[in-house]
Length: 138
Figure 1: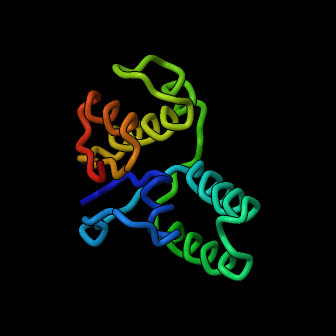
Figure 2: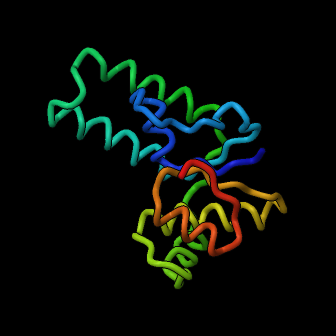
């Protein structure tokens, strides 16, 4: 299964949180945005600074994140992606989620693949489904 993986899915795995994606092992090709690395690393740093992630845990969590990202195909942000993210979507969508969805849509079209979106974000899931993409994780 070729799957676009958003930050919410990666963070649950990296942080060892409950309700991680059950079908993680079924993903044969994982794709994500370059944005995902920034989002996830910022989240780890923010959690650490707020005392939610111990100093001794931080390096292991960052290393796990980097290893997971290295196993994925990362799509760089382009002007086409940003333009599509700025265009209307059929449901309400925040900026970063719009970038994720635009990336997934343009990747699927460029690669001529059936793409599933893995997310734990309800708004992103609704928008992805409304654009015709399969969704897992919600």
